[in-house]
Amino acid sequence: MVWNPFKQKKNIFKERGNLIIKLNLEGFDKKNIKVDVRTNRIYVSGERKDKEKIKKKGLFKQKIEYSSYSDSFTLPEKVIPKKAKWTYKNNILRINIPIAKS
Image (cartoon, one colour):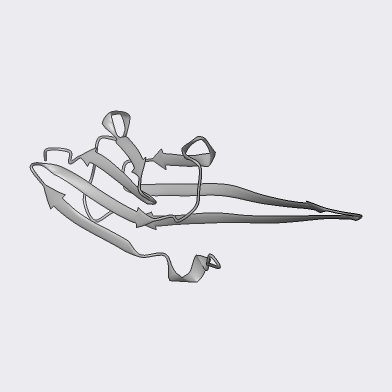
């Protein structure tokens, strides 16, 4: 499957006093994903590198694919950036950020 950065789905909703953001980042390794949350903005980036080696009689073929993802957007609520937490499981990046009380 070819990864297309222009088809990344974003789902943003409120849940129990938190702002939840879900992104579909297929094929990334958790260690290569970065999340930076500010008071009213979030920055998400990631890199991935796929290697394929084929060795047969008298043939050696190596294919390397590299892709990156970067996105930032304004949050619909003021949040508490220092308390932001995120997980990456089954190709879904889930960011949980407490909403700041007015």
